[in-house]
Length: 146
Image 1 (tube, helix red, strand yellow):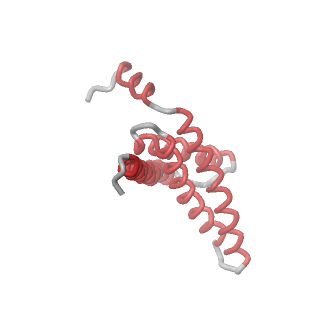
Image 2 (tube, rainbow, N blue to C red; image 1 turned 90 degrees about the vertical axis):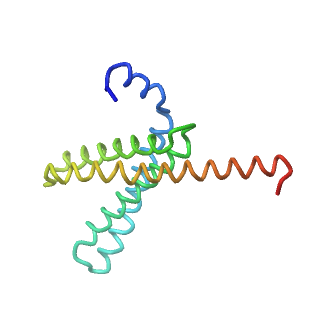
């Protein structure tokens, strides 16, 4: 496939920006809440590195939640919408980490981007499968088949 301005235009035209924006917002919110709850709980128990563990759990869960929301809201290409949401969410995490003087190296940042695309894309794909299954079940019950 040759990547050109016409192909990029078609991809952007197929992208539901509302679904992606809602997915990024859901990813950010759920990651923040989970990181605080899990990290705070583990830190209170005296576990060394509990806050870091909570942060990782929050980010991974947030990526999955964001991909799921974007995939659920997209009219088509649910996995693609989840992947774009994951990449944008990773960008948000990187910006926040850089503003906070994070010591993360470049390979760690690249690893985050790869994982975010995989996790959020898989969650978007699952959301699309669920939508299709619900659509088929609704069509069967509408036709009188139970």
